[in-house]
Length: 84
Image 1: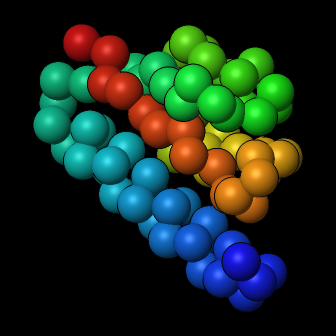
Image 2: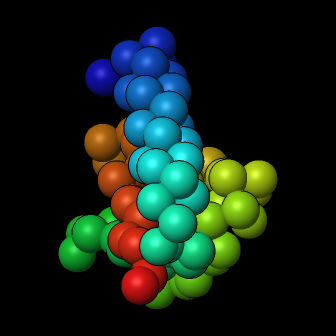
């Protein structure tokens, strides 16, 4: 993949993550999210596994997509799970 393609995917992931977080916030049910990584994530992403953030904190700090992701595909595949 080219750097331009990776940046486009990362931008789309960021937008998707923010929209998911805003949806959780609007639900009135979800106040926290947990980070879920894939089985073959890079070491940086693996260090995020299970970390819990408030929805507000995640919106503000945007831990996903992981900025230091070093996966061979070139972009972070981590996601948020709602904590209920």
